[in-house]
Length: 326
Image (tube, rainbow, N blue to C red):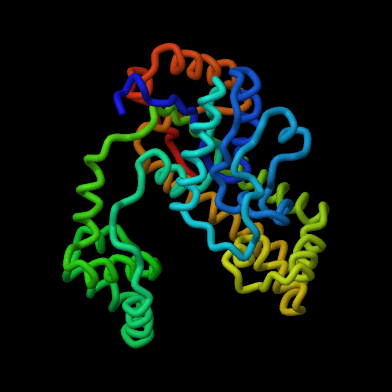
């Protein structure tokens, strides 16, 4: 696809509780746009409070896509997201509307904008063997095995990231080629979209204060009742969606394993840690323009205007860095 034919997207990223949803709605209203959700938990139906879905007021102001599209027992992946998002973007663009992507799931944003590495699909037998091996030699041992066949991938993985270590070993056993080689080849692929990426930068202590306030509001709004209803609907606590932050702790509370106060403190701690991981991820992504919100809303609007008017040249300009991260 030629650059002048690429659909223009405005992607709003940042850590949880940074104000992404509100900013996206205000921009979509101002620029006659619609929103595509890029939060890995907000795709699930019946999981509203713990996923911090937009309020009724915000969601009614502009159309939202990829919200409430699967049940909690579906193992929704980055590949699934990309397929749904590409279709939603094409539909929005065909109606002459602007497209705004909003969410804190960095892998989803990367999958959409850069595509997915064309590596072989999983092999359950090989994966099972590697998981058994992990019990014997541990994560460090697995990572050492990976370093022997794919030092580039091993260098970028932490020993605790067993899933990705096993995935890289699985690919090597299937193909005899290291995952890093697939990634290098993928790096030459042309991007589908012309994208302006806006990241909301929030001072660390302010962000943590917002996180704690949001968790308190979730509890007050009935998060425990929501989880009870999920149990009633037949969703087990070992589902991927039910193991997410907020839900797993309330599951433990409802099963009598911890007190409500303990659950709340764990949710706050794990959400703070998650926010830090999000910022670490986004700080490594190329081309994000970091902005202050809501203080600099007028300036943000100017960036969006320039992007839509100037197109690709603007998207390739040099952007400022947020400085410190939480």
